[in-house]
Length: 248
Image: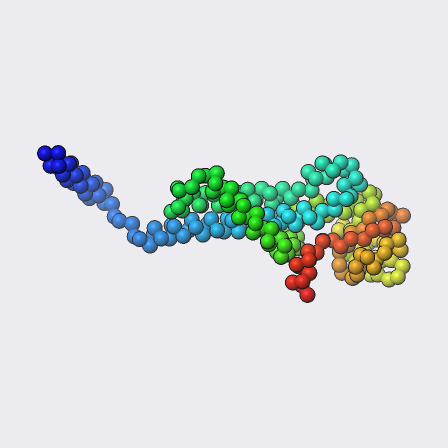
C-alpha cells in the first residue's frame, strides 16, 4: 500500500515537471556551456592570483628601493617616512585581485567544499609566494621601469621617490648624467634644471661606474645656485642580483 502511494506521488511529480517544462518552454542547457562556465571561473581565479602576485612583487621592489637611512633628512620620524613610502596603489590592487580570486574560486565546481576564510587565505598565500619569486627574478623591476617610462598616470601616482630626491635644499638631488670628467659631472634633474655636481669627496670606486645617460642620486649640499657638493652617490634603482645576471 505504501509503495503504491509513493509510486503515485512520483508519477504526479513527473507529470507536474513535464507540464512546467512544456508550459515555460524550458530547453536543456548544452554541456559545452557548463564546461565553458567551469573554466571561465577557474581561469579567472588563476589570472587573479597571477595579477595579485605581480602586485606583491612590485610592493616588495618599491619598498626595497627606498633609501630608509635618509628618513631624518625628510621627515625626522621613521614612522612618517614609512607611511609616505608605502606603495598604496599596489597594495589596493593586491587586495582587489585577492577578492576577485576568492569570488572566482567560490563559483568553481569545488568552491562549495571549502570554508571561505580558507579559500581567501590560500589565494593570498599563493600570490605572496609567487610574488616573491617574481621579485627575485627582477620582473617587478622591469614592470616598474617600463610603467614609469611609458605610463604617465603611473608615474604621477608613484612619484614619492622622485619628489624625495628633488630636495636639494635638504641635501638630496637626482638627475641624468649629461657629462663627466675628473673634476665632477653635469646632470639634468627631474625638472629639467642643469647642475654641476662636485664628487671629489666620493670614493667612486666603491660606488660603481658613472655612465653618461644614467640616472643617479646624490647626497650632499648646495654650494651655490646650480652647484651641488656630493658626499654620496647612489644608482637610481638597486639592481637585484638575479636581474644583473639576466641582463648580462
